[in-house]
Amino acid sequence: MLDKRLRLCADMVKGNFVCDVGTDHAYLVSELLTSGKCSAAIAADINEKPLKAAERTLIDAGVSDKAQLILSDGLKNIPLKNITDIVIAGMGGELISKILSECDGLDGKNLILQPMTRPEKLIKFLYKNGFEIISQKAIRDGKFYYTAINAVKTNAPPASISPIFEYIGKLDLKESASAEFVLSKADTILNSGRALRDSGNSSEAVKKISLANKIILETGGKTMYTVKDILAFMDVIAPMKNLHKGDNSGLIVGDGNSPVTKILFSLDITCEAVREAAEIGAEVIISHHPVIYHPLYNLNEKDPACLALKNNISCICFHSPLDMADGGINDIIFDMLEPDLKLKKISWFEPIHPDGRGYGFICSAKNELMPDELAKLLKKIFKCTVLRFTNSGKPIKKLAFCSGGGGSDLPLAIENNADAYITGDVKHDTWITARNNGIALYDCGHFHTEDIVIPYLIKRFSEEFSGLELVHAKADKDPVEYII
Image 1 (cartoon, helix red, strand yellow):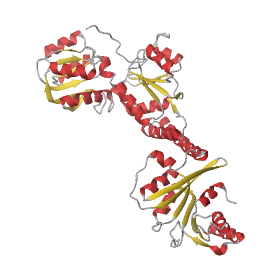
Image 2 (cartoon, one colour; image 1 turned 30 degrees about the vertical axis):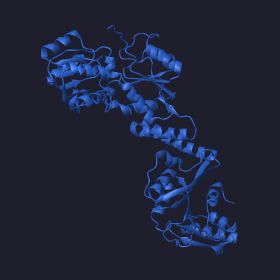
Image 3 (tube, one colour; image 1 turned 180 degrees about the vertical axis):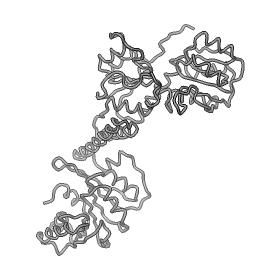
Image 4 (cartoon, helix red, strand yellow; image 1 turned 90 degrees about the vertical axis):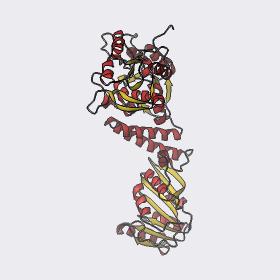
């Protein structure tokens, strides 16, 4: 009587001459011969001891005359000519792949492959090496799950497959055993990802956490993200290693182990944003500006951090790391300006770290504009209600920019011989300095030069983390009103 795992393999045998590689006790061969499903068989193993056990099984079953015992490393010593079916069961997916890769006579053979571990490695190997999966099944036997793959050699060109397919293959997820098997694999991937996350390897962690949740969604299950998972992806987008000393970024409010199904995004975490998050059921708010920047000497619900904690809402804030990130705020500004000005980066505007990374950029402009022309372009790009500027009257060939409140850094732009400086939060004395030095200065607003990062963050999360609901806060708006 075969166990469920070997019965799964037996059901995939189609011809009358089977070769069982790694036969062990030859239980599968014995069953196929005694049932009459096969009329001839080869029982092969790499060691003599299992072959002795196989011989006893076949003699006891009265079918030893129909079976040949062969000592073989994989398929190396097997005469394949008349064999219809090859079973390779009870080994790791990588070992099965190796056995197949070392054999040239597999065309036309019905392959039954039952990996005990790493089935995803075997599936990837098959598609990269001219095999096709005809069917795949999974069963549960006690507390263990097993899968068997029925494949043929087609010699098709190598094909790349998605990571999700590597784990699901041709399994019918409507079958409970198949869905449970896949979920068990997803759970393993998720745990591996979180171990990497907790060790500080955010990049590899996010790949595994993302993959696990995509697999879970394929089964019809619900995603399993935590606040720490969200934090790890923010560290990928804007590495915390670029944190400016004295800045406050990271998980500022909340419990890293809390589950997450919905995220609210806002430039600032205001009381209005927290109430919106509570109303829509968002467990996390992601912002650029820190919800706590200066020390709190008393606690009340007029402070958004306290209000968030009361409503069990976590606050993740990435300030300076998002300013300096590749693809971050200042790169976004560059990408917005480049099509019209044909910019070329010269250097970081305000270097902070030893490698020169910092805030903003100094750029050359191939398409020269007059200061008033640039003002109109900036108002359009940043969608400013009001834009303030000084008109130097000179064409702009070289410019500097820094997002947010960079008005006080005008001397850096002057020092670098920039014709224009684009930023926000410009004070009166800074305007005077700009006029005295003949540089065009633009105050596009702190909010408008940084809120551009919110759609970018939502896009990145939508591309990587499936199954999360991502919401741009209605409360994310310029806190200043204007009369024009």
